[in-house]
Length: 379
Image (cartoon, rainbow, N blue to C red):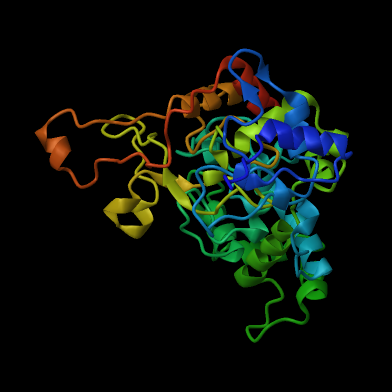
């Protein structure tokens, strides 16, 4: 007897629709071009049917490492932060207080703006005496679930991270050894620290640098991205995304290969990758994680940011050079830059950057790019 033919995905989608969504199209039979016809374009009834079931039955992501990725999930699937409410409340007060800076003009919230996804509206933030930093201010939404902090991962904890901007001469420029006494002289802070952390420590001080950074870290751990229509879609409300956004989701998972780095509830792998934006040998050269690790393999690698609230956190990339999210998509669609050595010296330089092999030309057309863009704005 000849083998029984495997039904096409269109046939499976038709069966699913006829069954009222009771069946799920098997991801194993769902290639990147499924539900698409070169003559008629995308069959959105087919696409919607493919996403009618649980995420585990959605089309298999393309470009992911086997066993090294996490399925998309709602924000409320993340474990709640284990923080002391009094410490978090104190941390919130500190986060918005410009008196943590040397000039009394710059707070953490000056660059991490709540109305802008806790990122900055500028490519590079202006700090002490108007000095510009060298990297874009990333969002702090979801940082309580990050395994390392800053674009180059140089901080292993939020407590360690909190002290960095306070002391940096181009940011808040505050001497860390002077900050506790400065806050102790401000009405309300000594009592607030005592209520949050208990009686003074062995040194007799209610306010210490350790307590300041602990409070800031506690508050930041509470900063989760807000729930969106995408979360409702993940939870089963299949009408929460319109057809263009749904097609964007499908392309994000398949032809766009976006889940090779952006997956899980926060849509990040918390890893480091070289996107070809090192600016090697030029004015804005930034060698990324190499400056922390000293490993030439880390040249040009930067931490994968969360895509939650990505439509609200531009300008984008580690240097903020991209003012348009659609422009970012155009670059990914082209495979991102791949710098080539211009001479023998560059060819022999172990620090010549190598763009990640995960990146490749995607061949998304203009309508498909519009769909991915619309999906990103729904996050």
